[in-house]
Image 1 (cartoon, helix red, strand yellow):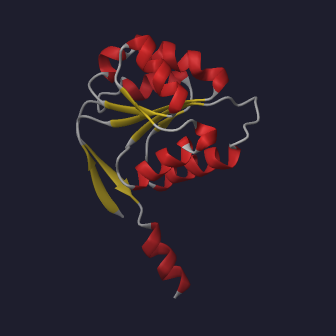
Image 2 (spheres, rainbow, N blue to C red; image 1 turned 120 degrees about the vertical axis):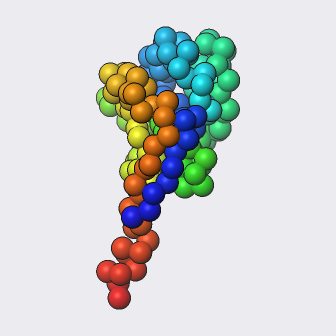
Length: 150
């Protein structure tokens, strides 16, 4: 297990499926006083809409179905994202469901806090440790796999 220190300013990904974009935009607008203290990024349309409607600066990746989920996953692996708010639609099948599953797997693999509902997002964002440094304990799966194979 390794320790990865998260700074006071978190690198946060904002992601939402089509039927949840309005929920995420509304939530971001209500919490912009906290979110503005962090580095924000998101998938294509979601990032653009949050920026336009809240005034928050959000770096945009491709849209989810066009590879945005994979870009966010790669950014997690590269330690460029350390937190994610992902308002996903549990009732609608997505054409990029395998990408979404891969993104969630990478998030757990790298011990990224993920909020997938508004109430979870509220609890995480308003946690006393959100604005503090945090020692994240990342399991070294690579060495675990190597050890199991030898």
